[in-house]
Amino acid sequence: MVKAIENYQWSSIREYNKRSELIDVEFVLKIFNEDRTIAIESLTSFLKAQSDDCCLDIEEKYILTNEEGLKFVR
Image 1 (tube, rainbow, N blue to C red):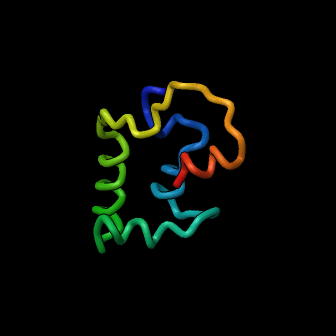
Image 2 (cartoon, rainbow, N blue to C red):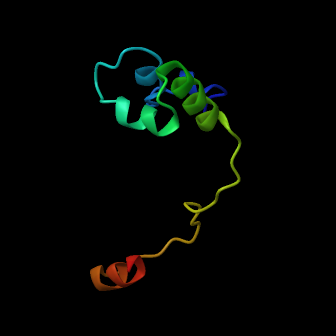
């Protein structure tokens, strides 16, 4: 883990902070604001915000059949 999101190798934040070469960032930026500069600041703040979300923190480990896996996902 890193202390700053800009230092995380797989983060796309660098694509938003400069002119993107890999992805179309305009759609996401416009969700935050029509003004590109404000949108980048808002996105960066959003990504840096502390979160207590634990929706992906499943610690139990199971070996499931395909059918059991599909039932779990549904």
